[in-house]
Amino acid sequence: MKIAVFGTGVVGQTISEKLEQLGHEVTMGTRNVEQALSRTNKDSFGRPAFGEWHSKHPKIKVAAYGDAAAFGEFIVNATNGTGTLPALEQAGKKNLAGKVMLDISNPLDFSKGMPPTLFVCNTDSLGEQIQRTYPELKVVKSLNTMNAYIMVNPSLIPEDHTVFMNGNDADAKSKVKDLLMSFGWKEKNIIDVGDITTARGTEQLLPIWVRLYGSLKNPMFNFKIVVARPD
Ligand SMILES: NC(=O)c1ccc[n+]([C@@H]2O[C@H](COP(=O)([O-])OP(=O)(O)OC[C@H]3O[C@@H](n4cnc5c(N)ncnc54)[C@H](OP(=O)(O)O)[C@@H]3O)[C@@H](O)[C@H]2O)c1
Image (cartoon, rainbow, N blue to C red; front, side):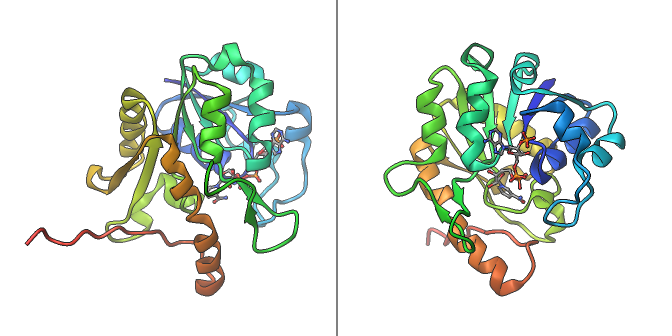
């Protein structure tokens, strides 16, 4: 499949690398291709700069958001929450219409330091804002409640654990579920929480995720939903 991945950070890189391994054609979207490829500083996790990472993945193309969106039959949104709507504006309504988007973004606001707050919550969510702004795009929020490496390699946690999905379109959720299963997710661990308004719940897991990270001092954990037996 031809897939556009928006965002060149750790999530964009990790997802793109996995999609390439699985045989998909990938184009990453960014604001400025030249600037993204010429970055030399390591990121905040000490990972190599994007240009260095990309030189090891030459089959993955890098393009402006609009060109990446036009290329993709399927879109992954891995942009920073505050940059998501600006990035989609650059992608262009017509390039998004009718497509499925796996939305991994979180509405985190770091402007007042750590821990971040949510810039939208309770009565709205970033997933809904995207869906409202682009009614012809089929938004499915998923994978946003765990570390990037676990997203594409769930067996890093040696027991069952949960990934959530929120979205309005059943067919789009089925496509995202297939993709998650190709990443190694077991069907029984994928929970369809409901329509896109339920993204209010999954995005609001981030404040607890951030506190757990502080307490465990290790980002390699995930949520596990356990249901009581019906007897
Ligand atoms: N890091 C994780 O493990 C993790 C886990 C779960 C969910 N998430 C969520 O996944 C998303 C990506 O995470 P990340 O850590 O990879 O993000 P990041 O490095 O903070 O940002 C990803 C990309 O967002 C784009 N961006 C930022 N501001 C923008 C703007 N104003 N307009 C257009 N694009 C803009 C940038 O693209 P260019 O600079 O290339 O233009 C950047 O490469 C976030 O929403 C995050 O909350 C992350």
